[in-house]
Length: 76
Image 1 (cartoon, helix red, strand yellow):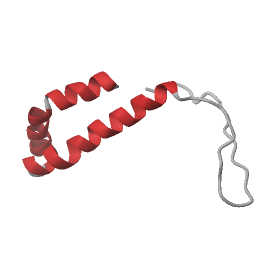
Image 2 (cartoon, one colour):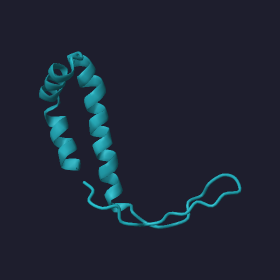
Image 3 (cartoon, one colour):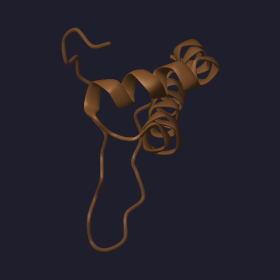
């Protein structure tokens, strides 16, 4: 996913032009709005790949928060 984010970042101008043609938005809106969010989203989820763990999470109030690991099927 980080490699995909790098490729999006490398080709951001071409992708912004394609996004503008595909969705009818302005080139600048795609370049400064949509594509940086795509890159940030890809990097965010790429960072979670090595952070899976089961533990009790701290919450405010008289509550208990637990994590439960279970398979969810095929995921990409």
